[in-house]
Each structure stands twice: as structure tokens, then as C-alpha cells.
Length: 246
Image 1 (cartoon, helix red, strand yellow):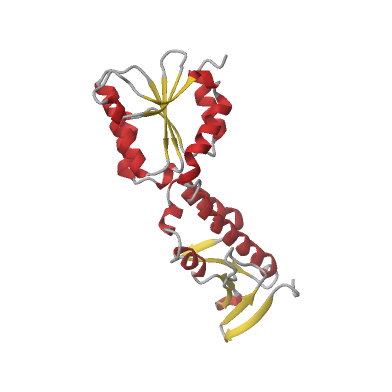
Image 2: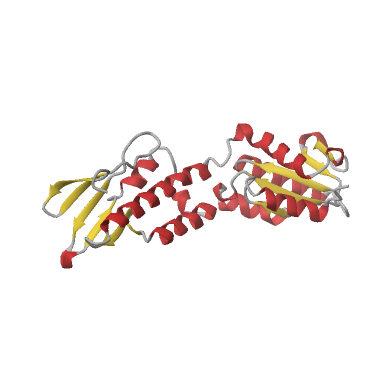
């Protein structure tokens, strides 16, 4: 512990910690010890972590959807509290060494939420979706960019994938962003007005990143949803219920 962590006095009530922990860009974690009444040692980042991440990410998204759930789990698992954007652990001289690593672990995991934010680059999302789909469903049961001829101007409203279903065809849409969510909402509305018989399956890059209003409109007309393409077991399960695999 002593060889890896150094303590520097900033003021009589504040000590700075030099640790081996750093962000991917090389910036070290900013950790401090505040001396509180009653001998309490408050180990804190003084808000630096979220400030650092805010330079390239919308940190409000860390508190929403899937990321929000993971965010709360991280704090609970590492006994870290939060106040006004600062993470902290109230420690004692006997536990300060362990708590330094707990706070460092929490910051590392919170930084990893940025990978959930970019979950999958849009440039690769459709390729990844295709690979996932073809691992589950035989290729001969799939038609890509299907046009439903029963509605006007069908060529303007292509369906990403039509899959031969047990009862009705399954129309699968990939949704990497809010613009595609709006397009899929329009396509589904037109299909419903044309009295098309189908099941829909909507696969998101990151459902939690969509504006609530766009997601609400899509939910009103859509069927089953997969929150993230990373949930391939969920995709498989929902397809197997609807598609004859042999």
C-alpha cells in the first residue's frame, strides 16, 4: 500500500492522494482525504470524476435506463456515496487503505459506463445485427430490405428483415439512433393502417439513449423489443418463440 499510494498535504484539513489509478487518457484519478469532526476521514474525488467524463459524454445519461441501473449498482457494491456529483466514502484510519481501492474501483466501473454509451458504433451496428440474426435463424428464412406491397409507396418504407414465422411473418428492425426510431414508427404505423398481419421485433443499439417521447411513440405501435444487441440470448429466445428453426 505504502509503495503505491502517497499522501500530500493540501491544507490542514485536506490531503491529496497519489495512486496508480488513471483514466484511459492517462489523467490520474483525483482522490482526497478530508478530515471531518469526530475523527472521520472522508475519502472523496471532490466531483472530479464526473467533471472529467463530462468533457466527452453526457453524464446525465449515466442516471437513465440501463446505465442508471448499473450506476446505482456500482455505488452499492463499493459502498460509495454521492453528493452534488462528488463520490465519497466515510472511512477510518483502520479501513482507509481498503476504502481507497473501493473508491478507485467505483471510479473505474463508472468510467466503463462510457462504453455502454457508445454500446456499438452505428457504422458497425447493422453488420453486427446481421451476424447475430444469421447465427439464430437459417438464412433461407430471411429476406433483407423487404417491401410490403400491400401499402402505397412500399419502396419508401423498407423493412430491415422479414423472417418466416410460425404463425405470422416477423418484421425485424434495427434501431441504432433516434432518427431510425422515428422512421420505424412511421413504417409500423403504415403497416397497421394497411392491415398487414405480422409480428414486429425491434433491436436497439442502446434503448436507454433514446428520448422518452420517441420511445413512447415507438412502443405504441411496436411489438417485442431487445434493449441492446449485446443481449443476444434475449434475441435468440424471442426469435425461437416465433420462428421455425428447421
